[in-house]
Image: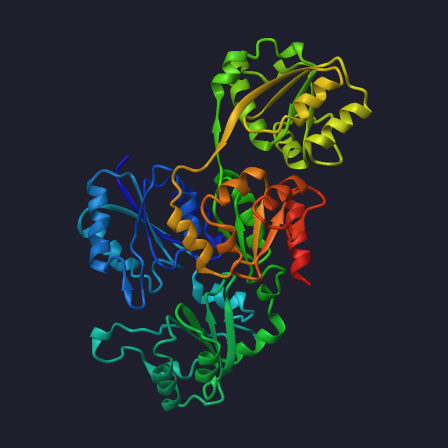
Length: 504
């Protein structure tokens, strides 16, 4: 395979608006050269070996100039990297300078492909409840740069023709807004023309203001609307009062720290995004499998056990990865009955088309032990593959009621090796944190290795959320009382509790 540079449109910001092809390329990329306006979340989807290069440009700052970016892409291809993703906000060919980059690649005989993105010109107004066209208001649309190349000397925009348009979008339009409005008014547009400014559109911190040519400057100043913003001009702006939807999502504008392992965090983060919130991923644990322990056990005598007990999704995945390597066939489980702690663990087994025979109503080791006692399950041979740091409650309890229990420690939960303490502290202190979620005692212990309870509690609005009483108890060791303790110990219920609390 020859080297190829993929000019990928990352869309306006909401991860759900990335194209399928763009997502696949990000996951497969050997190098990602990314822009300031591409959502940082996308970088977490890259494989571990992927090289990440910041080429971001924003007002007053350039990580790389356009010329340097062009040279970097060519150099990466010449070095032999196969899949080079140039990740650009919005669409690469709509004021994204993708055409210039493609020209340079062509000139230097570097293979390239264009992967269009959802343009912010249409998506951002949609998230603000403003249709850029409307049958009763306008059938034409102009998309204009709000920031022309200053080196051109004079404007190349036909302001006379533009002033006759019924719907106008200015991208990067905040800095030169006064000048652009004056030109439109000079060419015949009314000073009462409706106008809207949208800051950080499609993100959880999206902010929208609506006014007219006379008052929009003061409205923007009062509401601190800055770059990156999109300006919309025309009667379509009046539709916002009827069609607002994004800002009404239950967690809109809320910053929520997710402390789960990177592999598991995406599920929770995705749900937070769907509810309008902003997940801030700070993985505090990393799952390190111990396949050698299962290999030692051999699993040759798997049919001699009567029960197989799983306490986590990680346990299910690691166990069956090794089981299939040894036995090649899931049917080798024979007549084994399976018990789990929690619905998430049960769903992991369901994905393998395996039936769960026992799930306690209370998703804890104590809950499962109580179920075994009530069903009078004793004198049974039980295999429990689980984390090395798991509590002894279940194993000792099952032995106490007369069962023969074999515990196999198949994975460790450790602090991620690639985490930078300063970066994490910047994430925590960089924005107002509304909720910090903890899904296990390990996430609590490791989180406070990055920061201190005193620093986190500087924000009086921050609320600590524990998935259950055991996790809440671990928080109390650090002098913190959990504001929310889930009654049902699931991710779905954790989110439901946050939503309910947020409505107060």
